[in-house]
Every structure is written in structure tokens, then in C-alpha cells.
Image (cartoon, rainbow, N blue to C red; front, side, top):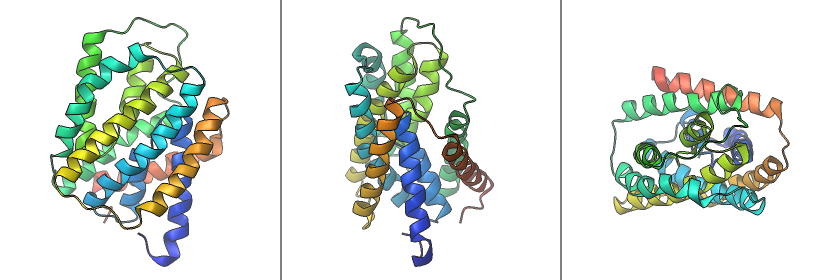
Length: 249
């Protein structure tokens, strides 16, 4: 955990990250990782903590979108068949700390562009899912997700929307459950290696879950907050720059 005088700032940002990610059907792992990097968490703690938070927030988000009738099994299954084993395998791979941070820094570009509305725009033209490509994409995203400690929603959502395989709400529902199962698989891989869990994880889960409940409900009701999204995009941008340039210590 951060120093005493920074704990409240950390917890506030954690709540905001969970709120905004859940509003678009994401668990928030990339945001949690960025936040923990800014507050000098170790990579081992970052991976396990982000996946645990992801599990809770993504399920909350999925439940809200499922209730709204947006989940489509035929769109979900081809991706997850290959992503679950790939995520487990990826979580067993340990990268050099500097390499890990640089890859994470690059991946943060995706949620930044998503928050700013540059990628992930909705199309009214829906096409039939290419199952072969879905299997390949699921495996690639799953492997990368396991290595970094994310659920993969920040990578899957833009692909689905770009290929016109689903609308915004369907994509959010699919991504949420995709993140949930991949996070469980990735965490299982980490635990099989004996990775430790942060002693304050219960407090972090409580704060993230509260943000996730509020964000998922508001996201399903089609409300948004541009100021909060801009602020989070700024935080992620700072973290991305620090990680890529090696100034995050």
C-alpha cells in the first residue's frame, strides 16, 4: 500500500478506475496496474492484485449487462475456448521487470484511446462472427493477458467493434465475462507458482467493487461523465509514459 498521506488518493483513484471501466464492460486491470505502478507496487503484487480486482468488478459489470439482455453466447464462446488455457500459460511466464513495465506501458494506450473515444466507436452494421479468427484472437489475447495480469477486455472490445461483430452493449457484455474467466485462469496460474497476495487486498476489493457496481449500473443506463474519463485518461497517460521510459520506480 502507498504511504499514509497518499492512501486516500490511491483509494479514490481506484474507485474512479473501477467505476469507469465497469461502465464499458471492463474489469479495470490495466487501470489498476497503471495506478499501482505510479505508487511503486512490485510487479508480482501488481499482477495478482489486478486479477483479483478484475474478477470482482468484471462479474459485477457482466451481471448488469446480462440483465439488460445484451449477452450473446455465440459471440462469446469462440473467443474464450482458446483464451482460458492461453491465459493460464501466460500467467506462468515471468518477464524481466523492465520488459514487463514497457509492455504494460504500451498496452495502456488502448484504454486511453478508448476513454477518449478515438477507438471503439459503435457501428450500426453488424456482421457474422468469423469463428476461426475468433479462436486465434482469443488465444493471442489470452496469452498476453496472462503474461501482464489483465483480463484482455481492453484488447477484445476494439476488435469486436472494429470488425462489426457486435454493438457497444453486446461488446461490453462479452468483454466483461471474457475478462472474468481469463482473470480466474490467470490467477490460478500465478497461485500455482506460489505468488503472494497483497495483505490489503480485502480493502482494495471493497473499494473497487463499490466503483464497479456504480459504473456498471450507470453504463447500462447509457450515462457517461466526460470529465472523469478525461481525468482517468490523463492518469493512464502519465503512467504509460513513466513505464515506457523506465521512470516508474
